[in-house]
Amino acid sequence: MASFNKVILVGNLTRDPELRYTPKGTAIAKIGLAVNRVWTNEAGEKKEEVTFVDVDVFGRTAENVGQYMRKGRPILVEGRLRLDQWDDKQTGQKRSRLGVVAETVQFLGSPAGAEGGAPTAPRVARPAASAPAAEPVEGDGPPESDDVPF
Image (cartoon, rainbow, N blue to C red; front, side):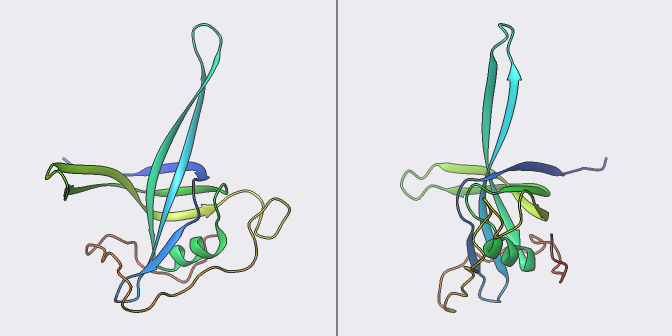
């Protein structure tokens, strides 16, 4: 039996992207995404539910996200679910978190520099080689490409 792991999310960034580089030079942008769902309950009242999702973006796409996206900007992310598991250092308990590894990203809304858009000044800075960065597991990131996602 074949498996299928695909996620498509549209939401707003909850914080500015955190752009880092692995020791081998691969860019990783960590972003938080707020995805809203609005519905009407049985009493006719509008209700809203917000789901917060952690997303990892790799390669050239990560650099573009780090340069052009800011907190509050709308974005479409297509990717796959990934379960991270670890032992809590303080309690020794097993912990886990479900997140998304982005395969494609599309910037939504007004372009950078337009009214209400993100600032045009780039904020991508390559940290020193000694800066700690998590090395992705082989096959974690999509293949790098020179295609700009907008």
